[in-house]
Image (cartoon, rainbow, N blue to C red):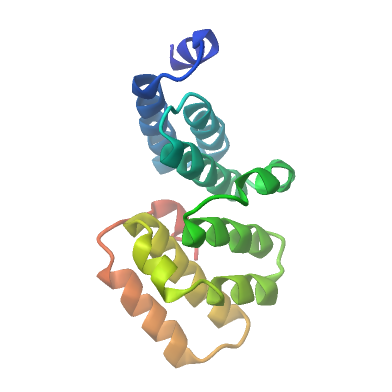
Length: 167
C-alpha cells in the first residue's frame, strides 16, 4: 500500500515520508536491509523538509551497505556529499569502505570525523560510529585501550541497532 501511495505521490508529502521512514526502520529491524534502503530512499524523495531530505538517503544508503548493495551506494555517494550532518555522511563513507574490506581507509575516515560533528549528530549515528570505530580498531591492530573506550561510548548511548551485532 505504501509503495502505491509513493508511486502516486505528486510532489512532497511529509506524512507519507514519515510513514515510509517508519516502514524502513521496521524493515531494518527485521534485517530486511535491501528493502529498508529502497523504502528509505522513497521517504527521502517525498520529504518536504530539507534536513530530512539530507538525512533519509544517508540512512537508506547505510541499509544498502548492510545489504551489500555497494554498487548502488557508490552511484549515490556523490548525491549525499553535500549533507550537513558530517558525522552521518562520513559514517556512510567509512562503512562503504569497510564493506569493501578497506579497513585501514575506513578507520581513517571514522577517525577524521570531528568531535563537534559527532556531538551534533543523532544517537543512532553516534552508536553506529562507536561500534564501527571499535571494530576497525580491532581488525587493524589498533590499541586495545581505544577499542575499550569506543565500546564504553557504545554502552553510554541509549540507541540500539541490532543489525550491527556482528560488529
